[in-house]
Length: 330
Image 1: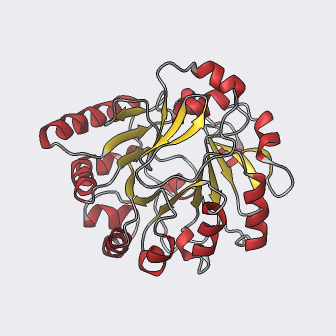
Image 2: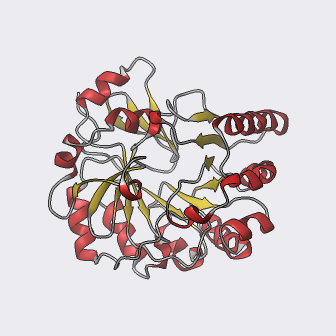
């Protein structure tokens, strides 16, 4: 049994069979057939379910939690094409940043990956949504918009709320599916119910909650802003209760940083450098794996030591989840 090879392009309403009992459903999450053997899936895998590809390091915000503050030149379209060819076999590619919509040629980047039948997702602050929404509509599984809550909270933690929401309206008007992502501080816990309500009003597929990592700008955060595992569990439980009371529809995810999801992300920098992330004792939380300008991801995958954590996280086994009856991922 092999997985993630020859991935077909998905429509917004269909599920994509990635092999080995894994599917990508409804544009927002992975699922695993309940009869499938996860350990066997990991053992037989030839590539990752999901990869983060930084198409730029530039950003028009200066988020207080940002871990990716080191600036690098943008990769050219030619370099991205070579990376794309070496990423064949990956199920989903996050075209990330920095802020990816700052690239004037972002529509060409999306075409490059969508035309080769990758599942494409885009994490964004949405502020440049109007510039790109119509060009990329129908080609992106979902836009993952960062939003910490109501106006004062988002503006304090991330950047201008009104700019974000103007971009969100442009994305929605173009018919692009949305999910929301929020970094959780102790000082933003009281805003979380409002964040969830906003997600529901936007008909988002999910609300993804993430605790900050001690890297980049987050090194300057007051220590009291970092909540404990127990506090995270309590906050998640309260949101589950509110979801039931108010019939909010977005699925809910929370990722905390435990040994069970260490190194689960595979991040490709603008230089093509591939890293496991976050690796807690590694410099900048990055563990170098290779470079997709020089070799295919299938070769890099062979020396990646967090395969089990990668599958467990993206299949919802090592994070808190609610909102779907099947196993799901962020």
